[in-house]
Image 1 (cartoon, rainbow, N blue to C red):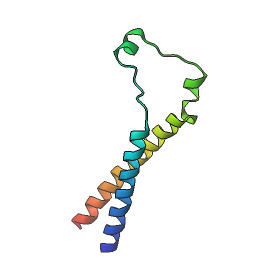
Image 2: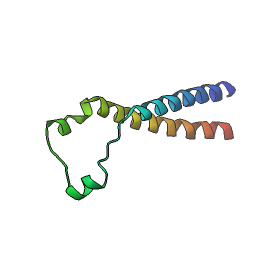
Image 3: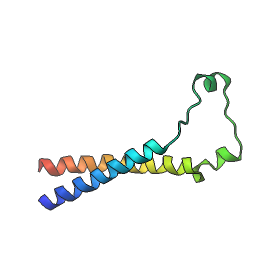
Length: 82
């Protein structure tokens, strides 16, 4: 059981650092108050294919790593209680 604790902790730390790095690589996505007032939502080719760009990939990996981090943290808490 001790080996499982160390393995989960190591994987959790690696995912934590990867999540920090990917989050800091992202650009600011919001337009602020001016975008809200003017309602500047364009529906062009770039917006439709945003998931294939670098920003879309970073956002997808941030979500995936965030979910993995949460699941591993809960599993690590359960393993340490037992």
